Amino acid sequence: MELTGREKNVCGIICGSERIRFTDIKKRSGLHQEILSRILRRIKDSCDILRLEGGYKCIEVDHNDLCKYKKS
Image 1 (cartoon, rainbow, N blue to C red):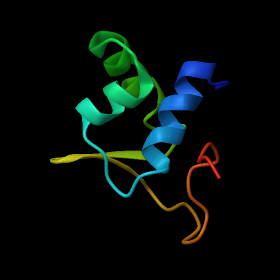
Image 2 (image 1 turned 45 degrees about the vertical axis):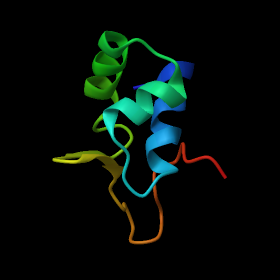
Image 3 (image 1 turned 180 degrees about the horizontal axis):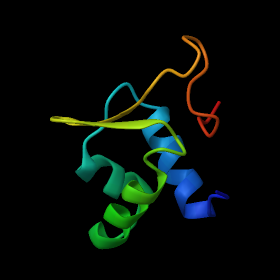
């Protein structure tokens, strides 16, 4: 699945943080909460994102390799 610019941005925000809350992703991305919710559902598997009780975080793929959209 090819990700859109918005989806890549959200993935980068999440993977650039240790753990991040929905409201913080919303603020940093500038997206409306309904749009952000849809994006998070779509990219969950593509970006290896894990939803936790206190927010979201990237799952380590090969112990050292995080989400390929992580901002350097």
